[in-house]
Image (cartoon, rainbow, N blue to C red; front, top):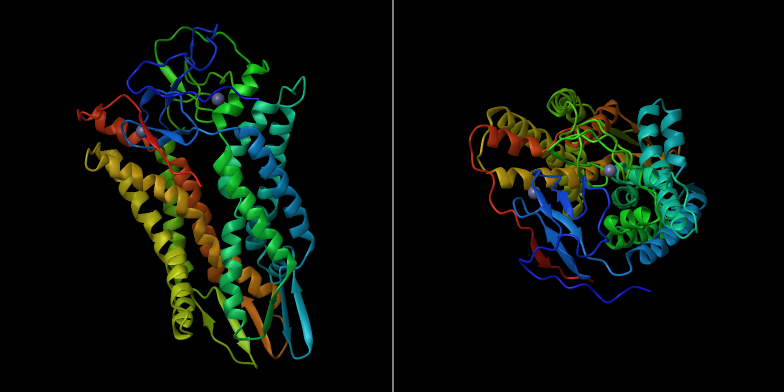
Length: 450
Ligand SMILES: [Zn+2]
Ligand SMILES: [Zn+2]
């Protein structure tokens, strides 16, 4: 089905070696712009298991994958089937005083809505049900569409949306939230794991495998080879521009539609600094009430104190659950704080055009971009507890006002991180006369593959 593996010759100029030469002179077929530092560089031909990294900031530009499309398709089909099963079956059963309570994925959002917390209900439904469902449908549409003799012309657009949706699909975070809720529930009642949880764990594994197997460049190449490129001759310009969505590099002005994915091309994210500052400000304002107001009240036998996030951690410590306490502390207190402080520092150093630890700041950006979503653990834990604990006098769990503030902080900081363009740090340093241009050649590093 596929040809012999391509080998990488270090240091040689590989432009045009793997793809057919383009007729459109404006498109630089093998060039890619690093999304973290803005360096344009030529992608080497990669063997499966190899990765191309940015020569300046070490961001991964591309992984070499074998048979990426078929393997990803298998994972996506598995994920969708298991997800349909997970939607139907209860994931936790609780038994107390002769009664049994079950929770499906819909129970928590429904109960939150009934208790006047529709805002959190919306966030949970979006991140746990809608976004994952959209993610599976888009991925399957693109991969199956490519197998048709005449793939529909909207496929590139669908594939473009996929990348924007990925961070908001939070099944693995939910599973960790269920685990935290499970340990807290055991103190109140008998808890059994339902079949829905196993299905959900299967979805998570399929998704991790799909992410590991998916090579975006191969999908774009396939879409192109089916003639789904919408090339319009751009006005002449001598400045290269990289597409933020599909990574294509071409000579075109800002605002021109990308010939591959259709998104408007921009040299940098639009109004990045202003949007990042505004979202960061809103998140910082909400950070205090998120930590000061109670997020949850557990009432047992008519008694119970509302507890804040920190008190929740202390309760876990008192129950001798050290690893879990550390996990919740890290996800709910450290990560939001890290995001607020790092983004503020990045914005300030961008204003100053600082050269100080530019590479480390870029790495820090990648870190907060990837760990930000894990702060949702506490929101999901709350959802599960509210879903299952409504046993009248025996025990009841009520959401507190801090929960809305906390969920807002998580969502706002995620938007703030996505709005900030780390390339601006490099631009600013260069504009202040610092020599940021070092190493144009991308490194090739072998990575261990499971
Ligand atoms: Zn870079
Ligand atoms: Zn594009």
